[in-house]
Amino acid sequence: QSALTQEASVSGTVGQKVTLSCTGNSNNIGSYAVGWYQQISHGAPKTVMFGNSLPSGIPDRFSGSKSGTTASLTISGLQPEDEADYYCSTWDYSLSARVFGGGTKLTVL
Amino acid sequence: EVQLLESGGGLVQPGGSLRLSCAASGFTFSSYAMSWVRQAPGKGLEWVSAISGSGGSTYYADSVKGRFTISRDNSKNTLYLQMNSLRAEDTAVYYCAKENGRTVTTALDVWGKGTTVTVSS
Image (cartoon, rainbow over all chains, first blue to last red; front, side, top):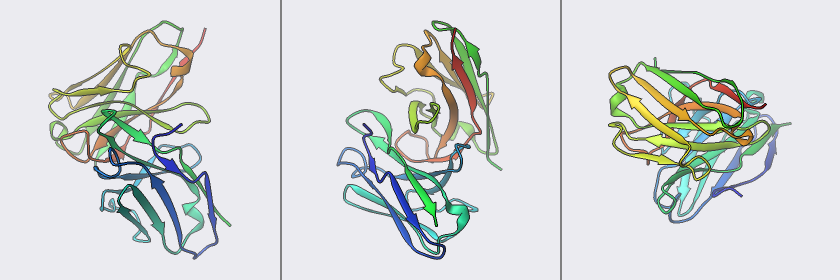
């Protein structure tokens, strides 16, 4: 069981806005920056958001937010190439370890 | 351009050892913490170990504590993962990833392409 909880699957149509969530606790999400990672067909992960920052080359339809112990990744204007697995991750103070969510499979219909 | 290139993976028997390397370029290596993350076949991402920019602080997942050792050579811009007493459950693709700061409590911002470790007799 993962320390961070993500939806197992989310789907949306092209052009739609979708939001993926990542729920933790005060020892992790409540205290540290959250990163979001996209993995297409089990290739190498790619960072699509870290903290409040959008990495170079990532389209600005990706945005991130955090409220208390829940972080969210929003994709506005969903594109077919956004279909992938998405993982969230942050540091956990009580575990002295980095923790990952179980991943969300995003399907673009 | 920031790049991370892992090497050292392969097939090893249970109980054996391997050393993974990650060659970094395009940034001031010593200024950033680094992590190893793995992914077993059909599974999600699992953090393995992390090290601060200076190398003075190291952290391990419980599943590898006492068997794996993370280290870095800042003069060679290279990160290492020494893996001993390997088990079948260590079979995975191992990714090297850069943290967005000197400590391990930031977020991972750049990933390597990974190297495959297979533990099997």
